[in-house]
Figure 1 (cartoon, rainbow, N blue to C red):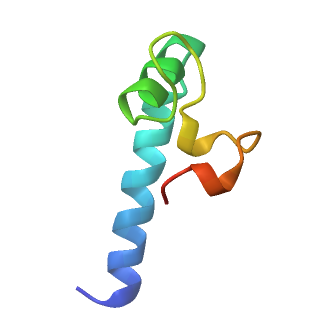
Figure 2: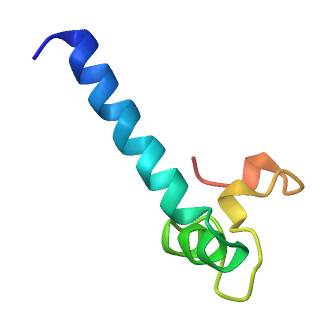
Figure 3: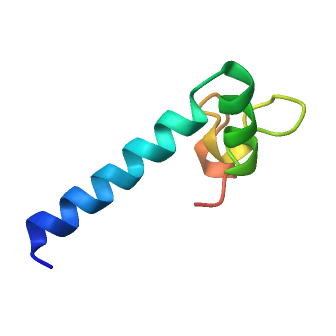
Length: 59
């Protein structure tokens, strides 16, 4: 597999994932919770919240 073919394969997989998980607001919400970006209550996880003092967040 060439680099261009690998890039296209990865891009196609990401496009399919995005299409599947943005089909509805509910699907998008579930994906963001599963990926650890939001809590089940709908709050942004602390490590992604820019309003927090970055000195307090472990990177």
